[in-house]
Image (cartoon, rainbow, N blue to C red):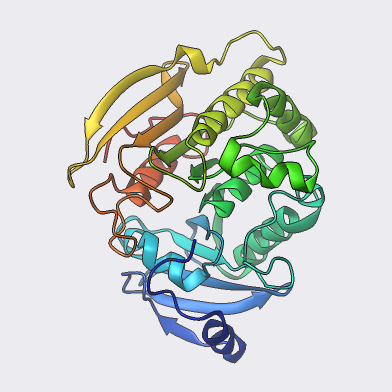
Length: 333
């Protein structure tokens, strides 16, 4: 889905080709570095006063289909949040030669593995940026919307040693074992058994598997990505974490043990929350927003300000879980 007011891909590509460092259109007061890595354009936001030698967290932010890095920065306003909390934001951009609608290739079997395809390229990009701008490697996070959310699921499944936590907005569970046509039906119909996919996610990480904090946000009125997908992300990572924490499928982490409550956002929308704790601390959180379609919650750009602020909720989750497994997750905006 193309965010309203997004610039043309041609214009963004022209600016990237010039290698310009621009001011932020995402609400921040810092600087923007634009470049290309392995054919992928990217936009790196750096808060004011955060020099290359300043060690800081990094958030990888992945746009959805039909969108671009600049438009996603405006939609999420992560730049302004980065100013307040002192982290950098890396916005990669899909290229038309990979997908004509600029969707991240979460549905392709070649892109659902460790050390292969787009996920591996994104990890290399994160590491390359870390060489130039000092990244706190223990505090690297990934989030995304739609196809970007599905790609975040792959990164969390296959690279839990790289990402300390992930946030999935209107995306899908880790998908592996389907052909391309089967996978393309997942957004509208939901995916395979999340317990099965949870086992496959553990296998993707291999010896690098570890318990991974995950936060999910999905709109209950989403007509492009069936809301069942949000529940499947929640259940899939519950199963993966159950297998990883003690090597057994024994229900030590269970989606069915989630505590539940409802709340009202400052903008007036109701939302429900389910949370799974581990060692008396939140590990998994799933938020369903009443009336929200296939858009980023709490975004003026998307016209969803009635909903909870997804950017703030994701960052609070990332900040509290930190680098040591599950930490204190947010309970609201």
